[in-house]
Image 1 (cartoon, helix red, strand yellow):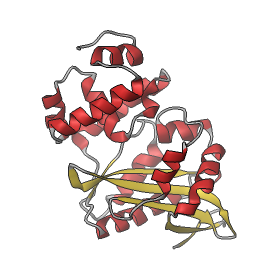
Image 2 (tube, rainbow, N blue to C red):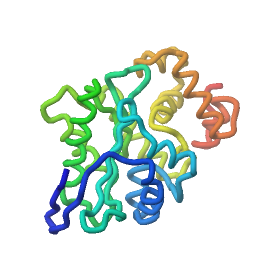
Image 3 (cartoon, rainbow, N blue to C red):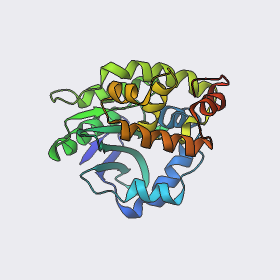
Image 4 (tube, one colour):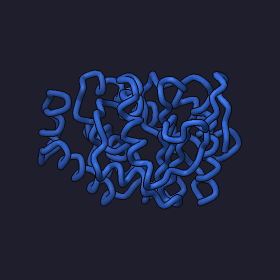
Length: 240
């Protein structure tokens, strides 16, 4: 799909490919600190080799990713949009879009959201979820754009809490940037004192899924308990 920006630049939107790793790594280096903060919720200086494999070697069914490149310079990555199906809710996928700074505010994010929604709907994904900062209006608008005539919609029962909590915690430069979106959602409920069962009920996932995410959080934080994790991130003692 070709998309013409108001600036006159033409970009080609296509599925991501395994040989896009260098483009993706270079694109991250070209993002401003503000764009990185809004996309990753924290500092993100580089992608690891494992991350690059995960981000580019997708199956197009459970993990869909689209890239936008300049038509006259296809090595220049302009934007990326992706969604990853949630294993416990196969009709729902985590969605994320990032547009390079020179091409922001030109409608490209909305166009990518629409294209991603079309691709998702074709493989049975009917709902998008997203974890984003409360001040990321462009991402919120793109999410609503994807919702325009479909049943795709943000999960309003928990999204506002996630946005507000993420904004507070990113400002303290916490270690949350290492967590996946699913782990972030679990973390925001753990910090309220909910039990594993209560977190699962709130997020509509099984207790075993919550336990898996909690194990991942502890491993990334280098801790063995909720109390230690809270102390690391927030500097307070929480429930053990």
